[in-house]
Image (tube, rainbow, N blue to C red; front, top):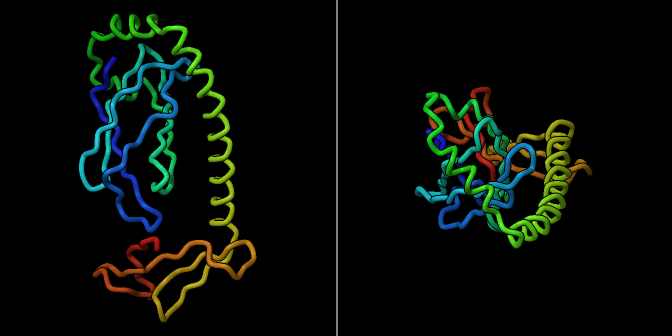
Length: 188
């Protein structure tokens, strides 16, 4: 079934600025059972914003992994979507027969391609998970300093000296600050 809701996301560059003009692609688009289903088109909205309208087989959750491209940070986006969350208006499953026919018409060539991409995807997912775990550990355990001259917060790497991530600090009037009323941080 086609969902009544769209999934929107924004791609960012390494400095945290929106990244328009990219061509994000699905590396994985499948049911929670691992069965591949045809992926919808990803459409650019404007200013680094993109969306797609998920398609579900009846009573099947959906997992996707998007590659935002080499200029995107983070490069990969993934999510598990619950069927129940997208069938909110309880419309009749008009597209059930079409979705079933589409999944039953999968060819042997498509299945061979899927098998090859699944091993690549598994390796990419393992790398992503390891990277995300490392970043989470550093954010939770490493030292942070606030530089009063540059109005920046600095998260240090494991050595306690090398900057890992830097943020500009702003108050609610969007003026640089290190005071007690930090309203937002923007990654440098």
